[in-house]
Length: 343
Image 1 (spheres, rainbow, N blue to C red):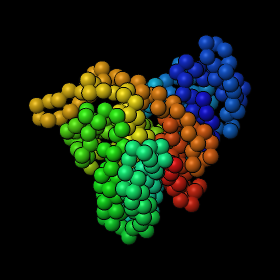
Image 2: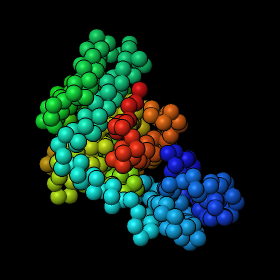
Image 3: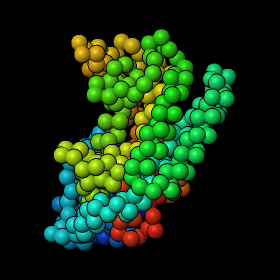
Image 4: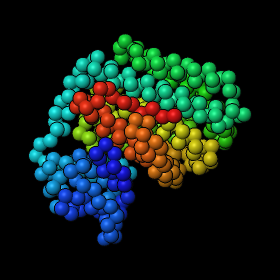
């Protein structure tokens, strides 16, 4: 349970929401846990909650406050809202920005600069924690390159140049990814990023983690009223969640990549968790997927200090905070979109 940016997040599935006067009451097993003045909240986001009273839902509708429900895993389920709120205006602004190359570029620059910044600090963490087990000169060189690339991304002249900077930097980052695998080296070896299908165990885990995080980003964007299919860097394509993929860029290294490395280096996932198919694809088994998901949920519960808010936030809530910040930027409440910068 956390209140951030005038939004109340309910993350425990046993909690029930009700209304008492002008207060939102949070209960568990018919016992009051907490209460919050409703006038201080713009929205309430409930993850797997036991439910909400009709009185609270009616109050939210009348006062144009959002009440959004998600599954325990974070999948968007439903939104309780009144006859009209600002979402249509927000989406129209999103579409205008998407059609404006310069305005799209301003957001894309920040997202890609953050991605490369986070990649760099993933290497720096390895340098700090495992200096005796890696080539420190090589990692320092790659880190310096990523630092320059992150700075270059902020001044990219157009989306083509930005994609070029991002592509080269990603290649540099992944060139030392195998060096960050410190255990089970005979069973987990990374040479190059492969997708559709993943051709080795590391790529199978990376693809699964990116897919899970994309779903989180999609739900986060839907929760604030943005269309996850209309992006700024990723182009429109039927079925492609372009804005969710844009937002994902900020979380690839600090959340997904580090989680995969943790699973390997702590022997949470072993070679027995995979199967190979005739076309060369390597996939997690059902048991392997369950173990991966169980630990993914635990990682989402870990807390970090959000770099912009300077408050403790669960990893699982960070995409929702970023989606809210993006929406506020589009509404004109912020001068620029503040991306997630992990360190």
